[in-house]
Image (cartoon, rainbow, N blue to C red):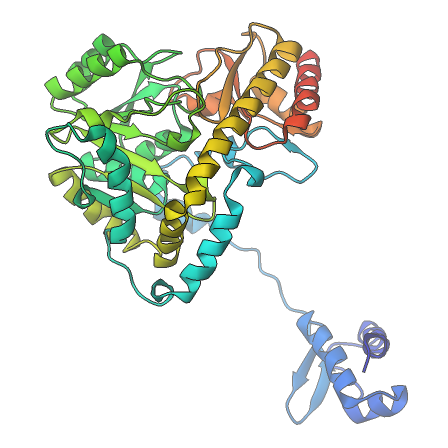
Amino acid sequence: MNDDSTSLVERHLRRLVESSPAGFRLPSTRALVAEHAVSPLTVQRAVQRLVGEGLIETRPGAGSFVARPRAVRQADFAWQTTALGAPRVDTSAVGTAMAAVGPSVIAMHSGYPAEELLPGRLVRAALVRAARGASALARGPVDGLHELRTWFAAEIAPIGASAPAPVSHDDVMITPGGQSALASIFRALAAPGDAVVVESPTYWGAIAAARQAGLRIIPLARGSRAPSAADLDEAFASTGARLFYAQPHFANPTGAQWNAEERRDIMSVVTARGAYLIEDDWAHDFAIEGDVLPLLTEDADGHVVYIRSLTKSLSPSLRVGAVIARGPALARIQADRTVDDLYVSGVLQSAAVDVLRDPGWRSHLVRLRSQLRDRRDELARQVEAHLGPDSLTFLPRGGLNLWVRLADNVDVTGLVERSRNAGVMVAPGADWFPAEPTGAFIRLNYSGARPEQFAGAMETVAAALVE
């Protein structure tokens, strides 16, 4: 029977429910069938709809009745205040870059590339093959598929072959993305209350993970250059820190990159202090000019703990990354990750291996470099045209973002809100500072929105500045 007949019976029953007291017995199925000339199935569908809304209750063998009103008790969560105690983690720690926006909003805040910049055809085909393979039903090894660990090691081996201890697959552990890797490293290599030195500004997710691990964050100023090696040495000496989290290549949010001299000086301090440098190589696949040379290639004694994720370069749905470390540090990180997740989905790992082995992957990276250059340059032109020639801090040689400084008297929080209300979402720079911001900054992602939207987006932001 069609939906019109069901609706007819439903309207009749609704009128009866509205005009009858609770507990009133409604007409039987047989009576409704005869009255409306419909099938018993149509009556049952209408009754079930109203049962689902709580308007009718059925009693087996007795019939259907107008439901009695349910007493709604106001929930009392006060007991949780005592049970939980003081919060250990800031519940607002998730950065603006993760905010969801509607299709009508131009997303300049996101940390992920648009679909047209991803190897979509390769990923979809790989997922289909992985779903048909053994990994769809098997539990994979806790440290990850051998093929994927070998691939990560091989990415380092060609450029680090002359090192005293080249990277092997035994030094690699697969993780569900870079964020979980960071969380495990902080928990495994430090104890609550310990200090961790971080660049400032730096990735908001690292700040959140360090705080969740109970670590004391020691900010180290960084602009378009690396932090001062002398300042790093002083931070180690004065705080007792043994961890230094850094992004030497196309840092998020600034896009800055360490030069050869800065790398050498910083590694000298880390080695002399018996410390770990946590190298976050998040933008390895997003080099526009030049190539990435991980600090891991210059370390033979396990001072560098290296993180690389494929989530942004393959697909946000393929949360696969890796930690490369040596010695007891790797064993501790492996233990933490196993307790936390047991293992990473074999289907996702198999799909990642499939894409990475396909000849189309390298071709994709070549195209991606050209696409990112065009997007970066176009957004830079629009920023300088609408926000002023001095607003762009510098032109990054890779990554996905432009770091923009506004006049010091700008209320960035208000600017972000007004821009969003006008249809453009930008990220406030404060999210990337572990302490007070040193200026009025915003971060703009040139890989999320379409290039033809850049001019209108910057015009909107400029108008919000005037407001």
